[in-house]
Length: 73
Picture 1: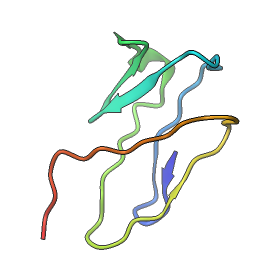
Picture 2: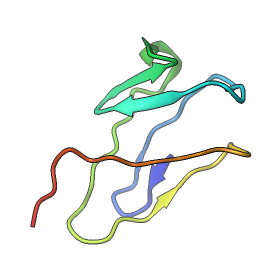
Picture 3: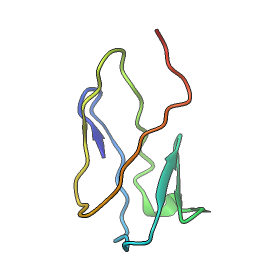
């Protein structure tokens, strides 16, 4: 996943199955509820002010959602 606005990238190095759930909580990735940072590039994704453009690659038939805890005006 790349935030094309900031240039930041998060990479996960394991092939996911259909039933897997990968959550990136801040800087900590969780696979199916278990911490799994060892299989990532330890990249962080932050937001720039205004619109942010994301690119997600390497996935097919996926369901993606974003939830941000803080919103700055």
